Image (tube, rainbow, N blue to C red; front, side, top):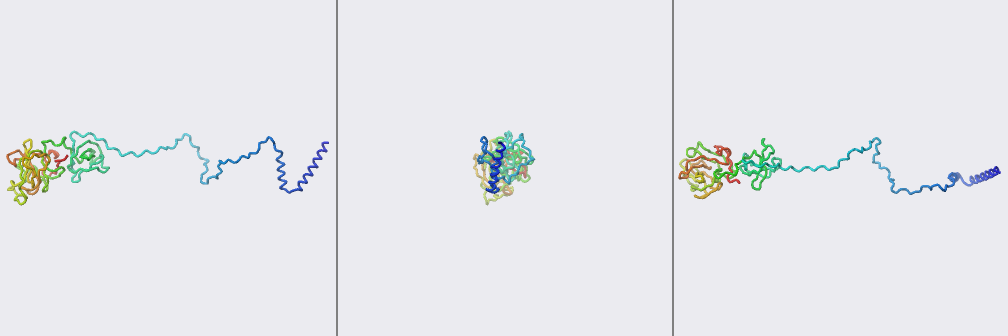
Length: 353
């Protein structure tokens, strides 16, 4: 019975196979063969994955400019310090000038000295690195507010902090001279010329030409005609003459016979001594007039016993007339002993602040 059933199935299959071959060509047959290979679907099998593609997936082609990773590169060191992202420190501002020490008791003021006609620059700090903030003429006097070390000038590092009016700054100690405290005392004499005037002594004490005998302690200043003359010290005008005028025999000078034909002023001081100013071209004060130190007396000239315009000054004791025997005279604004010699150049501080 079983053998008969197998034979029937075989015959049926053979007949189907011929019909299939007769009905189409190779491609249809291959398709069917594939279908047969699939077999009957498993009702417990999971359906095929038909999920849509991920729209966020990076489907861009590789960048041709990007270098591939180096297979020999070392992995990053987890202990390595992170790069310093701190911004650089800003450049420091210009240093402030050093704080000056208080001025010395014996140098409350300074006078510009040794600069000739150039004068002295006042700097914003104790060096020559920055432009000057002002200028002081030769002979100018300024108050000292402090002393500080700074740039060496001719080997000297001393600088003075100074003030003069609205001007304040620093000056090198090389080009200034200290003046005594408190200004000149009332009993001191200053040169008879305006503040900062720089002049030469044409004849000093014991001069060979005429400063001998009664005039041995006199001074002659080499100045031009009509230079203002100032009182060397406060006092009262004891004598004056101003009537020698152009056209007079001794107006432009002369020999010993012109000694009495001279324009002059004599000022008497509180200590009883007097100072005389001779050879003047013009006299601008009256007898018995009170004058202060630095006050204008008149203009220089060459009247009397003279070889030309200059200023002649001397100190004397009263003798009942305008010209008496001279006595020693020293100037508070002349360095050293205050007594300039023939040929010396002096700078007046008379009338300076």
